[in-house]
Amino acid sequence: MKKIFLLGALLFAITALTNAQESRTTLVERVELDIKDEAVSNFEVISLAENGLINVYSQRESKGRKWTFKKMDINLTEVAKKEIVIGKKYRFVSSYVTKTHFHAMFRVKSKAFKIVSLELESMKIQDVDSELPKAFFMEKMVVIGENAVIDTKTRKEAFLTVINWSTGKSKIIPINVAGANAKRIFFQNFQVLSDESELFAFVTAKADKKTDTYVIRVDRKGNKKKIFCLTEKYENVISDISVSKMEDEEFIYTGTYSEKNATYSNGLFFAKSIGSSLKFIESYNFLSLNKFLEYLPARKQAKVERKQKRKEKKGKEMNINYLIASHDIIKKGDKYIMLGEAYYPTYRTETRTDANGNVTYRTVFDGYQYTHAVVAGFDKDGGLIWDNSFKLFPSYKPYFVKRFISVSEANEKEVQLVFSAGRSIYSKTIDNFNGKTIDEKESEIISTGDEDDKLTWSASAETDYWYERNFITYGYQKIKNKSGDKKRKRKVYYINKIQY
Image 1 (cartoon, one colour):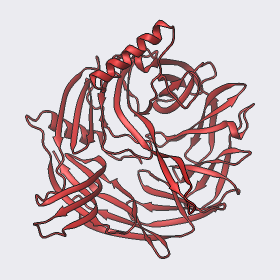
Image 2 (spheres, one colour):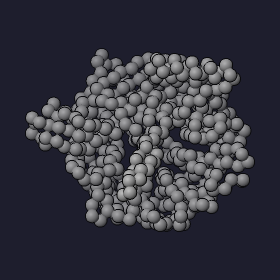
Image 3 (tube, helix red, strand yellow):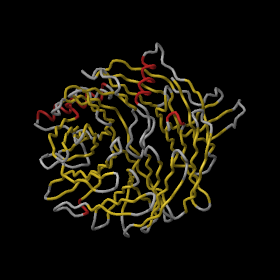
């Protein structure tokens, strides 16, 4: 989901925090959704800055799932509410938020699917139905202008499906790579530029024993502008990738690379293109960064370093398996500053016993574990000038790639960061010129505001910057209250308005 916030206001909030002698938060308002034993899911909060927020969630009912959209003002008072029931035959695939709309995509087992769109200001809901060829696979939707773009594959083809979410009209953008059939083409990432002028789709294709990353550019009308190979002269394989637009046709690409395949990563890459012409692409092993391992306990860090030295004596390079969720590149003069959040996929084993007592095991994806963030400065030719790292330790593992850190680049000398972990909000100020940490603060988040409440379980799904000095914290909680006027036990989704 895209976060909508004003950098200038965020700068004010962080400055107020970092200049304070003692950092603390205040719980201003709180609302709870008592979920009892009902199946409530898809809980999201969309910031409208000073215009309030919209709370999205779905609940199971006899005809399917009822999706609810509540608009609230800055005091968390409900001012509007809309609902729509999605039939039982549909299953939720993905959602996407633009500056003006919330979009959700649903599909059935056959070729039909539905896109539901909510206009954030008027709260008007509209939905369209469309179809694709049978036996297709789709995973993600992004929206640019009036067009939803979906990654689509069949056994014989890979293509982008472009659907006008207002009219339902559709078209396809074929993805053809010489020497690579559909089975060897994989979607890596979709990204709409921050100014919403273009969509970049990244795909990997294996042909002639070489795996390359291709860039497909799509305009606001859903038309393909260009497709080109980013790694034609690059010997490594890109594991994940993000793009930032600098000016005119200048683009910076960041992410992680691997020496062998796109499943595991060895380090960071930093590349620049002018239009479709690659100017440079530089690689940096994670272990060549000065502070990449500092988030680890000293004992474990020393163990990794000893293993690394043994590898080096044998002429080999040690690999550490991380992916990087990159933020937009910050340009300062002729220098570039990259911020990335390191994560890796986790899995769990599920055991099932059938009626005959036979036991089977299967491995199930269990979310992305985020570990730390890396901030690095590069010169105009992609040379690494400095780097800094710090621990993230978020309180949950998301099932999608997200960015926990809010960033302000308004100050020419500093990059200012805010993120949450557990029951605290942290702020860090990084020097643009040498990467050193200038200042850092921690402030505890108040849970419920009721001293009689005792949390038996809590999952803080998000802490997002809202407006001025205000943040939104929301998630799921189990609460006991033995002496107060509230229920002795309750299960809730909650939204807290907190202030520095």
